[in-house]
Image 1 (tube, rainbow, N blue to C red):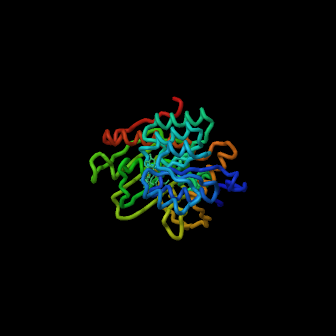
Image 2 (image 1 turned 90 degrees about the vertical axis):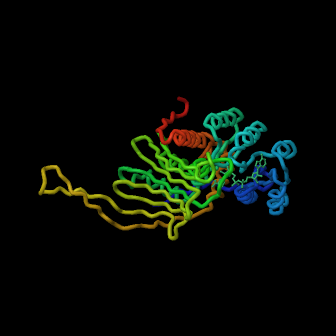
Image 3 (image 1 turned 120 degrees about the horizontal axis):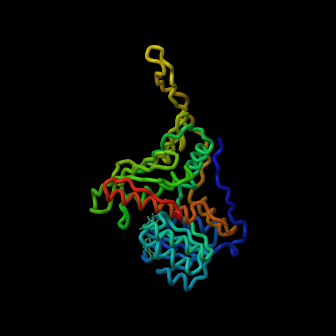
Length: 356
Ligand SMILES: NC(=O)c1ccc[n+]([C@@H]2O[C@H](COP(=O)([O-])OP(=O)(O)OC[C@H]3O[C@@H](n4cnc5c(N)ncnc54)[C@H](O)[C@@H]3O)[C@@H](O)[C@H]2O)c1
């Protein structure tokens, strides 16, 4: 089975005709965006409120102009698009200002901290005919795309459930809890794999280290057609793990980002129902069948690079990117409901679909 690798062409245009990009937020993640866009497009501006961060990244991109504020960058530097890698709590303000200035925007995940804000940002982008994309990086991961093909082809048979584990020791974010930080990846992956959104969620969370900022959560999501999904996210685990499991009645698949060899393992395992003669008519004996475990060869590409190509191609062709604003908003809606359920100690929360 071949994975679907996105073949977004990198710009073959001469550098001076490529989109002019500014990156705002040069902390832990933003410099990775700067690295890719300096290769694929015209990286003309860098912006960070902290002079030390700006300085550290600026010397790697000497042709880019440096700014300490978004308003200054928008005023003084001609740009086509902005990549937003500031903390999540600032996305609303930064993305709105960028869209209003006529920029295409690639915003880091999660798009916002409220569904109504995410919706407003989508509406602004639509009104101004700008591309709004959200950096749900794992949608551009070749292993996750392999899983999506696996599900699309129905190789699992009847889908029983999905399971995600994303644990780490830290990084303790000051502005959001572990659900916004880590579960945003898994909700995006599930929505992508199932090509749908959860109907109902329930979750419990624990704030061991800082009161009110949850560092551990166990989340259940119910998708259409009675597909159940479960997420375990933690900043308190001794081990860094990123795992997605797909369990069906014919085959099972596990993606482990950090596994070698890997990252995908296909288990040929299913239960055989054998009629028994001993008991009453209609009784079955359940026999677990264990077949091969296959590790498919998957060509890996840096997901962030593929994501950058997708953004540039969407601008070039004026089309919706995968993980567009609407997709990002669907993730925010689920995260908001998960947080509401945590506040209510696990009460199930219904999620209404767009436009209803
Ligand atoms: N897609 C992924 O896999 C992934 C990985 C890591 C982080 N992220 C996301 O990226 C975003 C940033 O995360 P990070 O770990 O780089 O955070 P960070 O705190 O390390 O860096 C944020 C930077 O933004 C700067 N900043 C904040 N507000 C600003 C403003 N108004 N104007 C200019 N600069 C400003 C800060 O000075 C800081 O240098 C978050 O939304 C996070 O969820 C995504």
